[in-house]
Image (tube, rainbow, N blue to C red):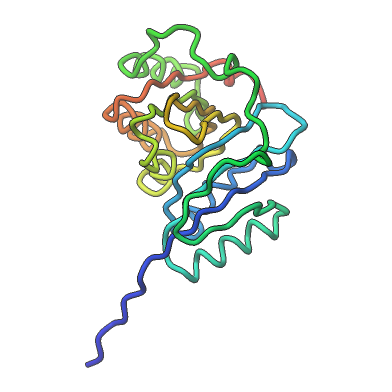
Length: 214
């Protein structure tokens, strides 16, 4: 009986520019759910309701054939693959798109909104009749830069995750901030928030979204 051939995972680093028309679609989430990749965001700049393109530095890991298919998928959408490097980290250059001038839109209103307060907000979200869509603000602490936190929300909990705003600089001097739009069942959403809590990552649920985009 012949042994099953093991395909060695590959790793690709790519900087992508996401056109404004695709910024409300879960492009990165689909790389995980559709192609089974692990996606770690190494740097990001995306401003909500901006006319400019957003950009992400991604570390993509997985089956080599699926990696190739995922890059073809991005190109088919019109997502510009600015730089691709095999097993090499992309370094910021003078040609890199700029980061937002400030993080005011991405910072919590108060530093006391930490991980132990989300459960009360979650119950309020349920009481308002919500069951499958949740918006939140996530702080990815600099100690977690090497962890594919957002990717695991998709692969481990089966969520669809759209990044609507992002600020993550390529150095590790500052924490990163992400505004996320999550889609999934109530139990999946609850479990994902519990996961973020266990990591000790500050999160704030955006209940104001309940009254918009209906």
